[in-house]
Length: 269
Length: 269
Image (cartoon, each protein chain N blue to C red):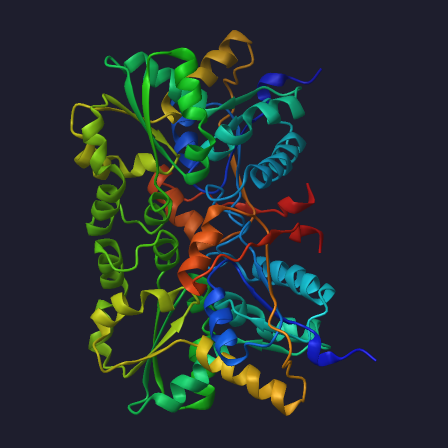
């Protein structure tokens, strides 16, 4: 009989940002095998419609299932917020965990004054799913959301602590101070890399939530409870829909190593 | 017999930037029918590989041929610079004109000191085709090229004359002064919208070339010489692979009107 513990965990994102989730998973579960897919040919998802994002995600999940994954982590907030339920219905036979729900749970446990900020891509914010999910679990919460479309491209240009990241953060974040939030969710996997620039404008006493961290803890708990944790692996495989220098550049920034990603044709799935 | 003059001109780009080419075509040829396709589901092309860009372009040309176009204008510099020759070979029965060659001709006629700057997306600059094409026509030319990946996203955020466009222009353009260029080619259809920010850093006496302008003149000349100019049309149809507010926002900036684009599934072509 096949040993399910040895099957890999599938993780996907619109591009390279999801590697911040891989990073946290590797901290908690260094002996799991991982198959990562980044849709670098069609990135970014954040400005695309729900229908397009859903179709791309189905292709990716089909690819990961072919890799025999035992569970799937949606690292992409745009996918999480736009089509998590639809994907669970479409693929009922594989457990799917998404970053968004984990970020929400974490924010709710941190907030004291129940005023929570959320920043993300246009599609994530437009979906309203962070706000909806927060209010489902904390009815009195006030949620302040903001789309920050330039954060992903400036991270991908390596502008992490310079005049550009300063002015872009100021543009998006400055007036959050007026809202008196005590918790801010980084609703996009690229944003943890801008944490310093962002803190400048929200103030030091704000809890800044990186949903990758609670996601990793939830995955670990799930594997242990279901007795499917791998204690003998540790192999990471990276796949992309297009190969260029950027993936290597950013994977070095995030994981401190190059990933040597393999290119596949995702449109055929 | 079908009247070829009445068939539309096909124009395509990775997204909305190509509307700056439509704008110049409409100035020169207001009575032509136009079919525009913007690949908004897969934009940007500038950070993608040659193979992916070629495959996307073939799908788009198949779509335009189905629309019975009499000629095709590649408004996208990334496509122009990476696969113009391959596309001409693949589609020998329709005339194809590209922005890159027109920009080069114009720069060569303007330059006095034979020092020419070129700015564009990563893929455009990496292809080396601007430099190669300039030197084919002006052997002694010195060409200074620079990829400016943040220009497209900041234009799409409407950052045209603010601190962000200032610092981003400074990052990419400031040291062009040292090169003593007298001509700068805007090798991306979005860049004409940043002309003011860019001029700040290259100085007032530099000829800034928007390749859309000579492209429109070349198209007009071609239609007249081949006796296929339309004098009785003027209808513009806009198609996109994904529909969102951005297309309307930017088309308003460029064409001073909304385009009411229709969404189609480009992957089936």
